Image (cartoon, rainbow, N blue to C red; front, side, top):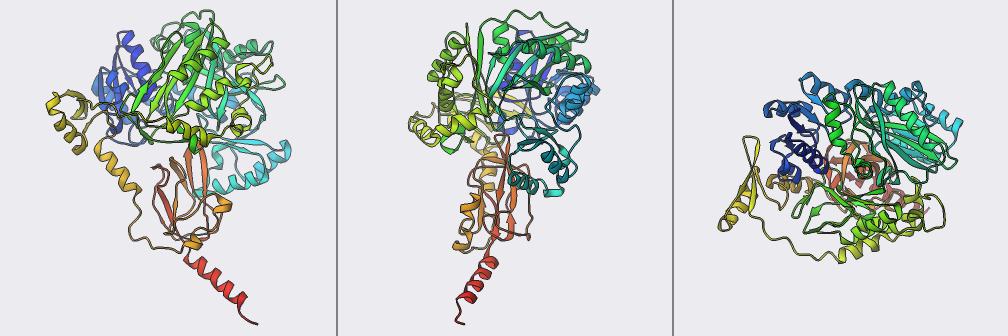
Length: 637
């Protein structure tokens, strides 16, 4: 390889580009319209527009990415994580184009990337998965039968899910009813799910693995990723502490069996569940680089991206040094504690990263950037390493104290409380880790006043806006260029920034994007006014309510993933009318009152902010019917 295209964005794109530069490789970045001036794009030797704003138009369009690779002279494609990294057709298309794919082959991804096929592969390799099904669900009757056999709780997982997406924990018959209602929409998607017994209390343990084309295999380190919220990892550490006797040997043997059985060539992660009783169960293999690969690097000194380059070039895996010390990664996300940690957006007005011995920052943002709702809420990773776990925790708390991000709400106040909790830091007198995958939601967060925590953080957010920048970014013929103007012409540059869609500065999104977002949030023209009393019905039971105009608004920043109705449909109070996805978990939006869907104001795949109108419900007929009933009941006999 001589020239590498990075088919990703944010901190992972910057991470890969830096290693490419270390090795003397030319790097090519691709970007969506709103990413034209991000740090990763600026780091690359060359950068090309993907000409779009949505994931489907940009980072998920493999044809565009291959076209850019060929036009730019790149001979390899690194998918990072997320996006195309686990799409076998993408890996195959890159190979068919004569380019090197920085990941396992398409056939390997097919065996492991889909959770159902991964269960079958594990059984064939002699590895024990969590008890469950190996075939997709065909009907709700099958779900009922599984519950009858195993009892509650169970978990339904989308076979194509990842990063916590598509996981439905069913604890009661009412949960099952809600699930059935939500997934009977738009023709239904039950055949995308399989079932497992839900492990009530366990630790999420994984192995960072690598294997080359010569059959050499190694486990770099174990990791513990048990601090999770909504099945999304929050804190990860290496090596996994307090493992029972014999666990490491089993983890290594099972990981090797999985990689050998699939002829895996590249880096990947095997994930397992460790129960309270000490049982180990296989969960899945992630055939790509993981977000938390950094902690394995810190305790071994390896550059795992460099190892990917070596393996892809036909070389042998590097020798794994003995693990030294302990490393912890904390995911810094743009989530507001005052709003139940829902994703939020805004402009970064002040930014100070921590420093000192053992502190590493991986980020895709800088001062003056706008955090956009279009993509994942993670804005940085704080990786802290020490000679042992207690010292690593102490350094992490010190680093969190030095970290300052103003202008946007973040999860840092919650992370600090977690690090200080006796269940996590070991001061509770136990000689093991008391944190389990459900600990954050069932034990920790119920004792935290998130609203006050968020309000206190907001009260400290009084930093001034950074000084106006004088360097601008221009796009000419689909290619990114940097233009630095003399101070006297800075006003001209700012004028261009606000007036042309192809010019931007570090103040945030490109002009036409802001205009589109503003239009999207406006109410639909011609919507009729509705009665206030009927509009508010149902709020106490569903959590949602209608405005006086009959508008149902989004409770959070999210992505629209499914529709439960269409204009003209009659709905009852409590019916699922739309499904949103936030923090990689689905949220069902229920009709607060019965009525007729007058209009749907969003589309599937659209990003919405808290307060944006989703649809309108005409409750007039329902209210009139209710009034007629009341009149009849109150009429003298």
